[in-house]
Length: 228
Length: 95
Image (cartoon, rainbow over all chains, first blue to last red; front, top):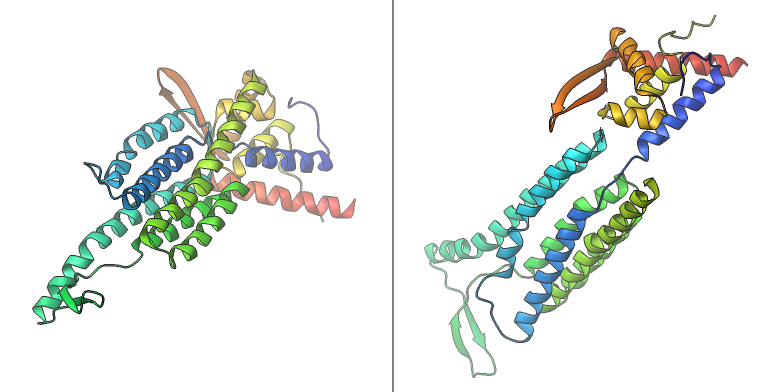
């Protein structure tokens, strides 16, 4: 593009239109974060399902290990920052949503771990004892500990939020479809046992992050090859 | 009565730079050069003109020992661009 040539009003309009389009389409997400979280959450959900199905316990909580995926995520984010040549307002908004999502997941884990024990304590303080009775064992009773039913369903609602926002803002259909599948999995998980909730979680992670991540990675590699 | 089109913006490369920057928070010099298909020398001259007019902010720093120039549109630049588009539409409506 040269600058000395005089331009007509029509040409001005064309330049404005084409440059705005170029800025809009300059999105080169490599999909590494999606691949990372898609893989980690899928594996953790499947292992949780297998643990319940085949009655075995790993020496460590698999979901505790998921938290360690934050370390490679920080490294990925730093590397991506180095390669990004243009910062968009929408990217900043999306990054904030994912950050809020991370904090919300942490809060939800805290809630699920703390609320049952606190509720038990509050009930004891009020002089209330909950008991569960087994009808088949001729009315045998034992203390009932408060718990939050289908807690995993709450995670599924949270998974949907940033995924759907990213998909809509970036006009990236695989993530929109993934988020809709995740919503469906949420409704399914409300009616199923905990072990099947884990399978719902695995399906949600595959559709929300793993498949969109694979597609993004392929697109990125393709564009890289075509630029050589 | 038509207003004159802003001479700072009514030029191929400067208008392209402003149109790119209007939709983003900030962009590196290499990104702008790539998208406008311009030479580094010419782009540098035009960016300086936009900077002198107060339409863009230019930030020069070092990243991994390499110079890095980033450009960002200013409030004055946004107003000027909007005014330019408005005047352009008025011209096109009558022609």
